[in-house]
Image (cartoon, rainbow, N blue to C red):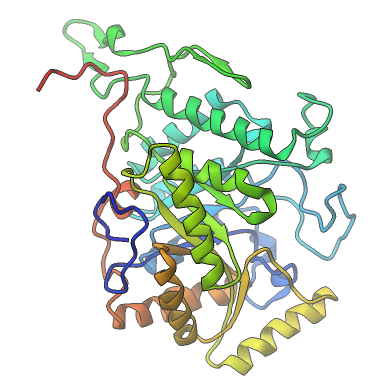
Length: 404
């Protein structure tokens, strides 16, 4: 996709810039990654660790990073904690981590994960608005749903998880409330006039009066409108959730992540999401689609395979994922990315198998390779995440607009 907004929202030509993001999760996505040399397991719960990995991603000129999160301990079982002690358990809060590293970075987007199933949109709205202010316009949000019964029991809001389709309906309402609250302050609502003693123009703060099946929120927000107007909203989708996840991407987000196995699967997902977006009357509004891809990279393919095998041996099982898994060189990965993007993708969210090895391979190996091919930026061209993605800053929906 072009870096400029276009009604052709899914078109991706090989001559157009490629967008890249990295999904950050602990020491990496392989459960044995924390045991690799350089993994820094003693620092996983420190601000320094997260500042360092985000700085590495920014040095590679990546569009943004996402921070994984959940409201239950990581587990290999969907039924509850697995009691394993040989894998990383526990996380820092994603939104707070993003806010901590924001002042230490200048260009890269920061996209924390939030579980809509167990959070209130009013709280999330002001948290992400605050992140956007702290980062000066580089905030995003990754909404996810939860079907875990043991996670549901942490909150007491409901006895069992909602059915899949209803969970995604709730997530759509969650996003709608968040977006309305971001618009509930006009851009010029703050006056800050010491001489007259007027700090805010109350007429430029608006009730949102949202009434839905899952939420009833009057507003306005307590946080001024974010610098981007609307921080970037993202969500993931896979066929395992039926059409509900793709519907959420199509109707409610700016960026969707799709978990597919090959270019054919990517093409099918893009087509399905395109149809859903057209049915919602949103075909003219830009939407980026990124394929999720787990990567194990090395100087040659046998070395990459050997490293992955070593990690598997430590874990006692072969690594599996809801995404395609790539094992090989950065040049081979570049070939794959260029092939897959012809399916209508505008970018990729890469999951480093072992962060200590695979993040530098992305930033210092893959990025230069893509630059040599003329498909990736050589410098940051915008100061906001919306700018990096070619998304215009929207006007507030409640602001009074003079007649043309």
